[in-house]
Amino acid sequence: MNSLLSKVAADVLGLDAQAEVVDLAGRRAMATRTYLDSAATCLMPAFVMRTMLDYLQTSQANSHTHANPSGRATTAALKTAHHALGLLVGYDPSVDCVVMLGTGATEPCNLLATALAADRGARPLAAVSISEHHSNMLPWRRAFGEENVRYFDARADGTVDLDSLARLLEAEGDQIRVVAVTALSNVTGAITPVAEIARMVHAAGAELAVDGAQAAAHVPLTMHPGSGGDIDYLVLSGHKLYAPGSPGAFVGNRRLFAKGGWSLGLVGGGTVDRVDLDQVQFHTDPSERFEAGTPNIPGTIGLGAAALVLRTIGMPSVREHEQALVTLALQELATVPGLELFGPHDPSVRAGVMTFNVGDLPHSLVAAALSDYFAICVRNDCFCAQPFVRQQLDAACEERGFCPIPTVEGKRGMVRASFGIYTRPEEIRFLAEALRWIVANRAAIEPQYQHDAEGEFRHATFTAMPPFDLVAATSRGVGL
Image (cartoon, rainbow, N blue to C red; front, side, top):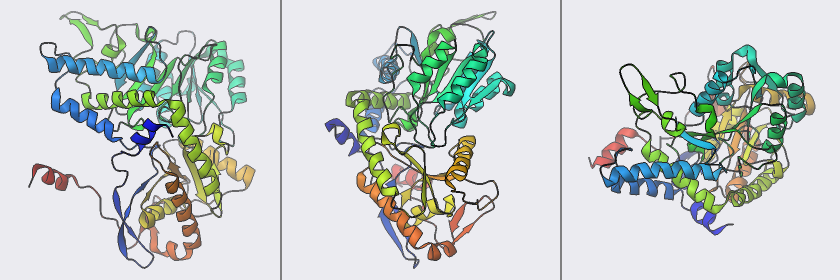
């Protein structure tokens, strides 16, 4: 493993946190938590927190305060963070802007959809992959109107169906303003051939918007590889990029935001060059125009630090490390009786997002048992991608005969284990071991659980004590 990657991966906040577990006899104990939910939020490497603390202890101030060193240092740090994030994804600073806002990819997606809908001209349509997270589907539906959104399909293995996209572009390409697609599925871990899609989209005269929230921490992203394969607009999520608590970001051609007026984004302090009682002159720089108010300065600095170090490590090294984990996970999960894995089984086109069901065991029961008996943190349900999860479950039923009946009508879903740079091979082996144990002991496990009207399973006699309590932590912090 890359030496810097090894160093960073070994020093991560919460990596060895303790959690309460129970055994089949009801005995409680403490165990080291196994965190396999990085697709939802990555743990924070310690260097990110140290960088933020360094800033807070030496230079905490508001940005755009020019009269003192702290204010100037804050403003410079924010600009550095924007540039570092842009460089991580291969932006062209002469063409592209970086705008940081919100707490994930949702707000950047909404801003982008609103801007493109306002600029669609004679192209009234948006095309969206059915593989999308709701945050890269609902904004297009609202901005363009339900009747003006077209969808292209995914294959049964969870990859984007390029033939479906080609048919759509051939039929309505001259009407499509933008095509929106994820770079990496948060459901199946399938890596999207973004450059190939970009060439198809640009040949039809449309532009490409890419949701990079899941991909940016796992695979190399290059906005301008050339030969028509460029990404026009990219959205990112800081909390999935090893900086929990940081903003989301938009990276893309600033030409889209050249228009003035009140129609886009929030307005307020920092968005303007001049305000008179009868007129307003907005900033022409999108990173100023659309970052209204006082920004999340510590979070932005943390995201900038993460981007700087990931670029120094090199995303190809991150990808190589994760591909080895995926290869191991494919081997280990294959040993679990009745386990159905969703997504491609080729580690060269898959990242560390492993979704599965285990026979006819409800997904919520499996996730609860992993937590209660083993302190393994996974996610379950539909991962804010309901249409895609239903499509994948239907495909598994139709093509492979894997048709688990939901505990509650309409509440089908999956279990998801996902990796980060800090995930260790022994944790993947432990997950497979735990799943085999659950299968072997289901007769003893199932009576210990009850499910509610929503299909969520809870242990009848055991509730793990919460590892964090705000009031208690505050009291400790203040010395009471």
